Length: 217
Image (tube, rainbow, N blue to C red):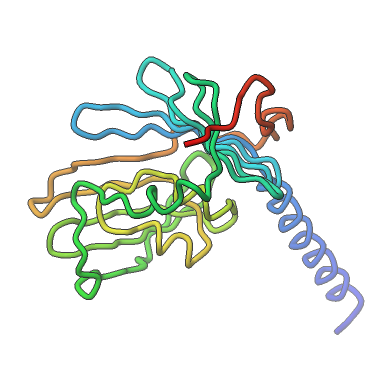
């Protein structure tokens, strides 16, 4: 290989490293805002990420936060702003995970998990399509593989139907948009990111407020 070709190859390698470095920096954290719709009801979810510190707020159509899931190094709690109390996530985990969604079907043998070839850019996030379905419902799921979150954040997200969260956790991906259809092909639930920012949230957002007391229940 002559000197000119070596020079071109060296520049190419530097460009690849630079692109990978930018992508790594881009996904250190940020804010993802979701809107979930089901049967005329709208729920907003705001996900804040700063390294290992992660927080998921669930708010109603009036912007009132009902609960927040807060995870970080050595911490896992659920905050209840209206009551200004919090509880350990481990105390609620079984209740949250075992809560059956409206279209739940327990026959996992009939579930088909398909990774399609479709790709789409959503809010600057490169996503690929998954299809998860059984005879009762179909989940059209768009996931991103770069933005990593604590698996407990995924557990806290709405499920509604087939256990799609299991596949997201196992594959270590991030859900960006979900469309769920019933056996007639009618959309019964949608869950999608409507805003994304890679600006790191202030670290103070991930602390338990001083005025909150730990629930005894």
